[in-house]
Length: 346
Image (cartoon, rainbow, N blue to C red):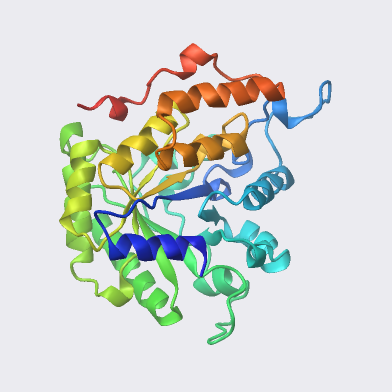
């Protein structure tokens, strides 16, 4: 039993009293941002004076970072594209000797097609899936029933409601097909429910209620055998998160990290969402764009465990950067600012 499963069991056994908190590193950006997904190079990425032909990391460098995070053994879930999962889990077998659970993005709806020159994210989300569950579990599409999983038996499935009956109907039909297939394959999934990616005619103060009601309504027709292992939602403020977490104690709620922001944004979010009922945080760009990802993850863990305050964590993180000779993107005072509007909710 890996660390994730132990934590999930503890949370389910004691929903209100469990101190466990799950952190996932979302290294699936190549299914969204294309060639820029490995992230920018910082001063700590290369020896002094070394020259690189481009300011962005390559895919091999991206995998090297994933290997380092696996070796560090702090996060509970490593979320990847199927291509990287194949290399690191199926070929290199890194997760056989790790307490981290591998997971793969099981679908890639059009609102995550963030490509240079494109405008897909500005049009209503459409369902799409590049990989099959057999690809995720076995690396091939032949349907090896009963064979030992060599990839992952956990995946992220995302849906986006846009307040359009026809489009949302198609989204739900596709989700239904996925659920049935996942149940047959004994494949676990966590459900990501994005806020609408276009103007859906919903006032910002009502966005949390819109998403929460969709989640409750959608899952009301789903039995235990086909329900998600946990949820992943945008943090729409404490009231919306607390409402969702309290509605069904049997459903574990997680939040997505969102855009990079300041280091204080990242650390304060994980402290706040735990306070209001979340038990999972999935950080993608907040980790990937950090100057020192391993130190950033270490401080995330300390904040999630209540060992250090978000502000103390920012100061400690900057101290670590200074000790390693890594130039921070922002100076300490700027990085102590709260810039994410949702973190300003009262």
